[in-house]
Image (cartoon, rainbow, N blue to C red; front, side, top):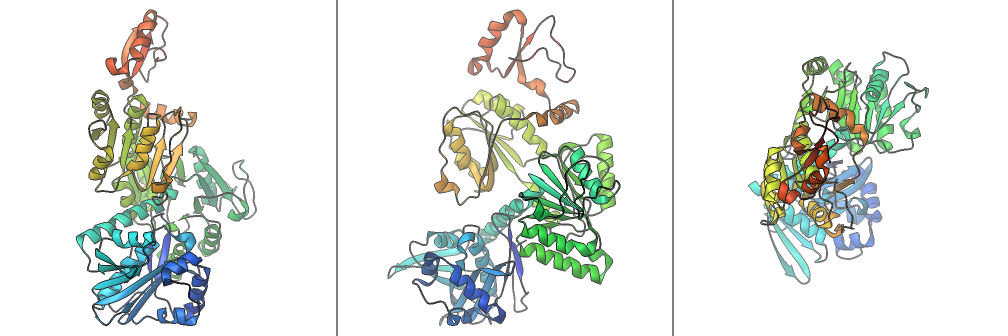
Length: 588
């Protein structure tokens, strides 16, 4: 979604995706932005002002006037906006050596650490290069480590020297392969983060959920209920009438709780007002089922442009409009108005055509084809199939610990078609078993540096998901070192001792950490996957004993290093056979 500006014919704006998945509009500051820029600088903390200006200047019109209406040859500038507010600015001034321009950046205190300065640098460098500038010079205070890191990590060829207590950074702004790779990496991290609220929502609001059966909004809400969504779903309609026995709200603002995904099922002309209300409430993911946009002609096209501008102006993403909805197997979400729930599996499917999408869901259910996700992109005003491929293409899952819990994690992770599953353990015998369960790569962290190995396997990025399946402090801390910026650490091991949370390295990585016990909500789905042949639990039953040999069974189970035992099954005359597992009584 990063749009590079080139040449003299400059677009009015560019929308970029930030590290945390939010979006930001970058554009040249105009005369009408004078007050907005003044307000921006006056909101900055004393420290941010000091680092930007190397002192504490009086902020007035002379401060911002050189940034307005850039001519690009002698001076250039871009502002970042959230809604109507200026929240970031970057500008350059050409020096006597016309190949060089001095550059400076400032970002609102509350938004620092999200990659805004890096995105501004990317765009400003492209603009400067288009008018013959070859190098940026930045004078940076030595204690401005965040800005020094921006320049070091951008991907440009860089050098620096300390002159009279100031670090002079020289950037050659010609795009290199390293720079392009870093931009691709930043795009990937941003796009994946921006789509998570669609695929992993904890709370969904269906706006336009009518109590009337047969209505699109009402049936979509009922489909969410029938699918046994693992989060909470709120119906919203003008009258506040309950839907399918669930309390409804007159507006999303009335809910009073955070909502991740808002699904709009309203007449086209009323969508903009409802979308704005959802965005103001903090919703980051908007799915518009409604028709009445670009597909109907000029009037609808104008409405669609306003919708995209509204959504991006609030830092959110848009699915649709004029689409069938979205279904995701992970949270058991069926936010579509199709007649059937999503059969769980490991195939992700997107479709522009609603009719084709409905047909695919029908055929998938008839043939027992499991889907990890179904997305109807509709008019593709914002989210496209390319974004979805970014989300689906290359997740790397690392499982630390190849005991029974870790092996179960390896087995179930394969359902979501990750690019690779990496198992890490100290015992070669357990790693061999991990390969049997589906691990693509195994690492013995007693003999090699697991962090370095994972970095090499992921082109220096790290794992998208790191699962701790042991339950000791060392393996939890290893997982936090293995995960990439924007990634997730899932703790499923049972801990008996405290573990250190290294915030000094994690704070900048925007890592999500989840913990918790397995709940029974997943049992019906697991049984369905077993019955359908998607999971084979018999692999865990490594030893069988008669009931009379219970002590031998426990001795075997207690020494897995010598016996390679995973689960031990006790069988006897009265053991009940399971048609799904074909094993005897409850395993030890």
